[in-house]
Length: 446
Image 1 (cartoon, rainbow, N blue to C red):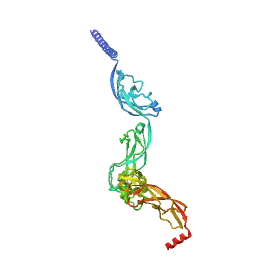
Image 2: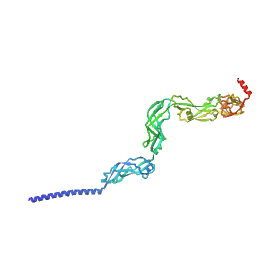
Image 3: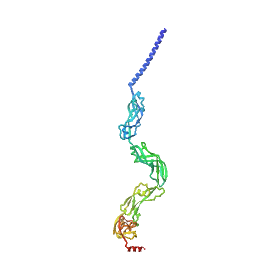
Image 4: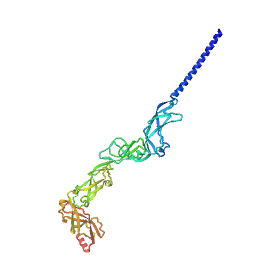
């Protein structure tokens, strides 16, 4: 009986061990079958991966060989939809992928729309690319170069005392180098050292330190500097302060007989500008209310007269500075109601004056002289040769020559607003006085 029980126990334990092994084997076989079926029915899956940095690498491309650069790109990061095996996909991250633009076919500047490509960084990364978002990028390709520009200054918050004005600013350094895309550099027309510092009622020269630069196009539009490199942004600006005044320009009339009314004629001379703004760098000096811009010979002022005078030259000679922006002033004759007439003078109306006492006799060889005179129409029609005299003055004339040609100044004896527009010289003959004439003249003088 004991043997029988012992045998049954042994068989029971053996049966249990066999069942455990069978169960474990069955479990393993079930997992293998499930994995095999899963892989057969769904071998891979799709997913979106975001935040992949777009690489802009032109090294070795035609862009690099032509010394061009990518100035701007409208895409910085991309996302992709990929398909990969379940075992592979869990290992794919933004760091294992590379998004890039292929520049191998681009060799010219300008704005280009180019496709974005994506690849695995290593050969171990295997996937099928289903989509790239965005799929294209706009890139601006240009050549970087450098220009040099003079620097002025812009100081908008500085005011000056009454009668004072700033002269041209002096910047140190006076030039700046700017490096950037050629297309943008071509837009730059003006460069200013800028300061918004407030200073009031300045009456003498001063300096301002600036640490900002502004650039403008020829149309006055400010240029974006984000893609530009400036050689310097710190400047010292010297501001000379001048004494300024608005003056009345006028002309002087030359070669007029003493009896002629210059002021009457000046009222008929119309100037294209009735005022000029000028300045002096002598802060203690005074500026006259009037500025003579030129001299006009009376016989030049004919009907229809007009002439321009260079203001810059006049001011430079006087040590003054033009602040009016007017380069020249035109003077013209208002000849309304004026007329011109020709009159012939005989020898008795042609005379010599200021004859030197040098032992010689002087005589005019011209017997008749035709002149053109200008005056008010109601006056000039009644004038005759009896109303005029032509004077040839020997004052300040070199009388060492035997024959002389002397300028003639014509005077109207009856009216102070009639003048000659004839430019003429008369020949004057010089002869040595006889002994008797010289003695008589000496006695008379005693």
